[in-house]
Length: 222
Image (cartoon, rainbow, N blue to C red; front, side, top):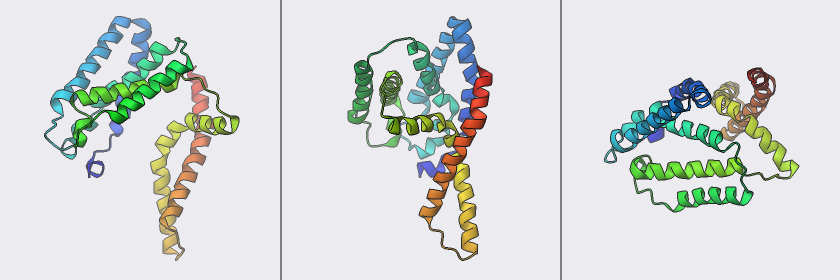
């Protein structure tokens, strides 16, 4: 019910992309302004967690406040901080693995309460945010070379992940049109076929978008 009634948080991405150039510029040109901005964003995060979101009301009742971009911005900033602060730090795989496992185990064993709202409010939210950051930091600094047959597909999946993220709902909609066309022409087109078609379209088109669109602008940006 929460997911069904939740407003589409498309504005979140626009807000994140608006702030991102400021993160980059201030962190390189004016560290005082950068850390001041970071602190204000963290205070906003605390405001939503401890004041605006009410633990006595259901998540579905507060979906709009939860989906507010300012409620999520600190998580985006956290990813930026992980990259900025640790990119030049050499870390042993054992340490990175320890951080990853620490975050994962804490996430599993820490009691969140019976209500969904308890996950994103109060101290619980800070604990789960820390778990998220520890897991991300551990994976980011882990330097493990998998066999080529595993590494290459996963590497490609990671590189094309943003295109996959953006395109998958469009692919699912297009597959629905195909299903509708098939049904109108008395052709059997079960739901699993639509799902498989959506996956195939998503991965295929995302691959070409990454190879011939994203790479071009990445090079231009550099």
